[in-house]
Image (tube, rainbow, N blue to C red):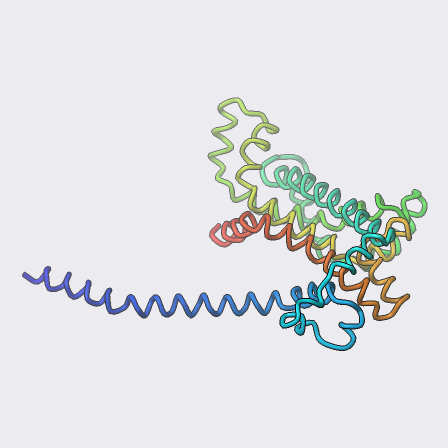
Amino acid sequence: MTTVPSAAASRRRARAQAPVKRLSRGAIQLFLLLIGLVWLTPAAGLFLSSLRTEEKNASSGWWTALTAPGQLSLDNYTALLKDSGIVQAFWNTVLISVPTTLAVVVIAALAGYAFAWLQFPGRDWIFLVVVAMLVVPVQIGLLPVAKLFGALGLFGSIPGVVLFHTAYGLPFAIFLLRNYFAEIPKEMLEAARMDGGGEWRIFSQLILPLGRPAIASLAIFQFLWVWNDMLVALLFADNASQPLTVALQSQMRQFGSNIGVLAPGAFLSLIVPLIVFFAFQRHFVQGIMAGSVK
């Protein structure tokens, strides 16, 4: 006799709470939308500025283009693509960022698996050395590595910049992937070995698919760090191998506030990391969630 009224009361409470839940969910979505708009405002302002003439940018703010879209044109981008120095700097950035990211991910994945699941002499001590390298600032290694690269003939070249970024990106990458791989259940690896799987087969067909979220997150971070770097490239790259960040900084130093070149160049430098992030955001979120529940 008491079950029916209790169930009815529960349904009434659920119906009464439904509008509150919808309201709170709507408020959260509105808040996140506002945060997204605030985050995208600088990028939108930079994009609109890159579509306006230098005279328009000097006389009024970029937001005036929202009410007068007739002032927007692609002339700045046309002029930018005719600038051989900027175009070459863009491709230099690609030639630096992509090989560095691939090298760091591949080497760190192999080393992370070895430190997590392979037994060899001095494994723990070597891993401690890798962890200790995390506290070494990049600035400390600039001068010694510059002298070494000068002796090897790598100074002022794209391979030199790639090697420097790879070397300084590996400690964190190995630390991250080793800890992620170590959380994979040991029983899965033992079952694979009992089925006759070798270490390379286990790594390629078991570890890599399970570690894809962490690997994708690492690739995103490494790519963004190298793409946006200016300090290392400013020291190790010459005029023929300088990336886009250094080229834009050089344009700013030579021509002051040359918005007609800087705005489209800066947006070009911004849009590529955004494309990479949004293309791999699903894997990035999976990596964060997986790390939070392990």
